Amino acid sequence: MRYRKKPIIVDAEQWLGPQSCPMRGVYVSTEGVSYFCVTAQRESVPINWGDWIILEAKQDGGHTVLAYPCAPDVFAATYEPTDAPH
Image 1 (tube, helix red, strand yellow):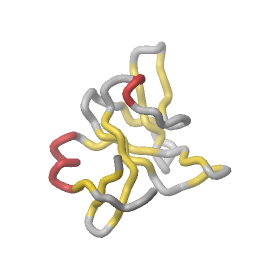
Image 2: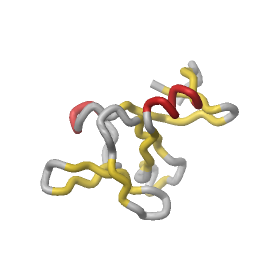
Image 3: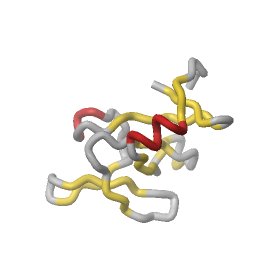
Image 4: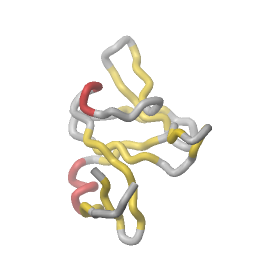
């Protein structure tokens, strides 16, 4: 599903475990237990259960490879669903 941050539209998925997000190349796993987003600054930021994973616009060979987590309450206060095409 797509969400809009006024006036920006982003792609995002809610993190409910590794099976919950179909995005590939976004997460780094540590011992199969902890998961992280790799940001545009190449930082590994921990993903907490229920966080929204927001894809950044940077592309690598046509595939988005960077993302950052957003706490559910911040996401709900900042973004609203949109019908904008991908």
